[in-house]
Image (cartoon, rainbow, N blue to C red; front, top):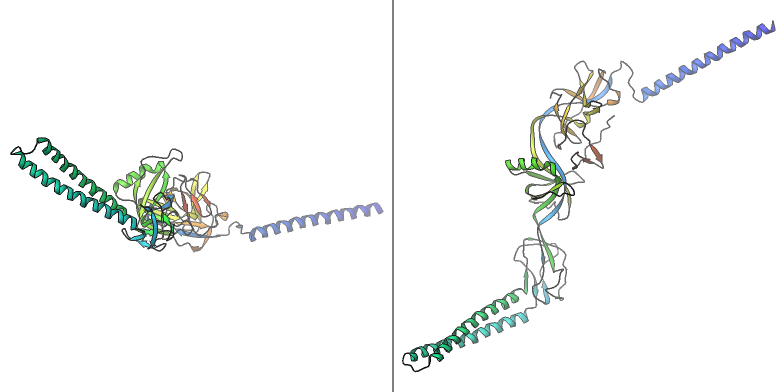
Length: 424
């Protein structure tokens, strides 16, 4: 009887233990499901909230991007051409000057005396020439009566020629002395802006001084020199044959266009070490946003895609078969649509094929999506009206970003400050 009772108790305890284990498993599964729902996982059959935007048509400029260095159109180091004491400095540091403006003066006393001496020497030689010509005229008349020897007449002719040459030498010496005297007044060689003064008033300056007195830099207009990969040279030459090409100088920190200029020259050779070609553009620099030595991002406009299909770049997804987007259909489900990409930047992408302007594309909520998934469009993403796209190959190209800089496949970079989107 006791053994029978023990067996019954053991069975009851085993049954209770099994029920407890099953209850624990059920609680654990429910907790995990609840956690998944809290994390945003879609429950089968439940519509997924997404953001969408409508594909649209736009005229899209095609830019080639690079990094350039601002250079002054002209730079001149103002040096003295004579030795002497610097009497006056007639400019302020950072002053705008015109060509011919007096910048400084050298003590002129010595050079003025040299000029007066040469003028006096010329006067002496002119008096000698006048007397020699009179003697030559007398000898010529006396020669008709054989009153003088032929040798004396020839000697007088030679004296007159010698004095005439001396006069020319005196004139040259006067020009030289006058130039030295004029060099005592130092003028601006070009229009531009003065830099820091290199020598103070009262110091003795010399022709051999290398630092000069001041550097004058022409910054209106101004130039930017930048490099582009050699594979773009053919496209640039083709576009340039149609007319002048526009170049934008963009601030690398704020992504703001500082000035708009035009391409002026393409280097006549390619740098074999980097595989790039140097290009120079000129800018009016009316607001003086460009400064010599400054680094700027440069974008060269080479073409415009007319009435191209444009979508936000956030809509693009990369799969095993290439780039695709999710299309919001009329029954509020999504469909996977492969697309071809012409070019893109951080905010906008040009679609070459696979999409119509009237179609809606999903721009957020991708982690919960699959083909034929029901969706709820929470809000429509407004398209960016400022289209600014960079050359890009077909779908699947590399789009590297670091610190707001997007590096293209061709090696050029574009600085962007687009709002961040979480692409899942």
